[in-house]
Amino acid sequence: MSSLALGYVVNLLSRREYSEYEIRCKMQEKAFTEDEIEQTILHCRQKNWQNDRRFTENYLHFRAQRGFGPNRIKQELHQLKGVQTEVIDEVFMESEIDWSKQALIVLNKKFPDYRAKLDPKSKQKIWHYMLSHGFYADDFADYVGSGDEYLD
Image (cartoon, helix red, strand yellow):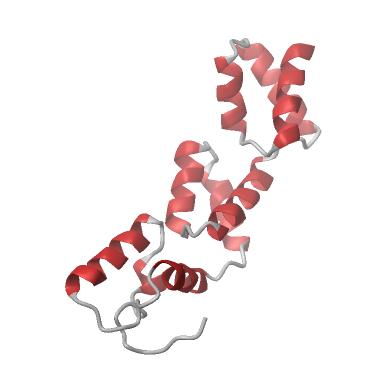
């Protein structure tokens, strides 16, 4: 393992968490050899400087706070961040996030009048927004256009 490769990865990890896949991609962009990449990542994992589980936990909480639902976060973690499905599933199972409550927070912020009787076009707009932000229909369907008052 070269000290240049290790220094590069330590510099990255000193600023924020990265998934193993992200580090691998960044090292490939810098033209490190496959051997250097493998040795450096292994060393960082052994020292617990890089940990996909910890990365997933942090990413989950960060994206949930930004108004994204479980479906979108899982997709991003798997497709963009390269985290294995097993790790994602474990972290989500252990997570204490109430997704229905998160959906209500997003509805209140983006669509303050979501409870009122709505025309089909307005309902469709809300549904599209919520689904595209990764919420499951079960998390918000009962609230949209219900006419009922729900407390946050």
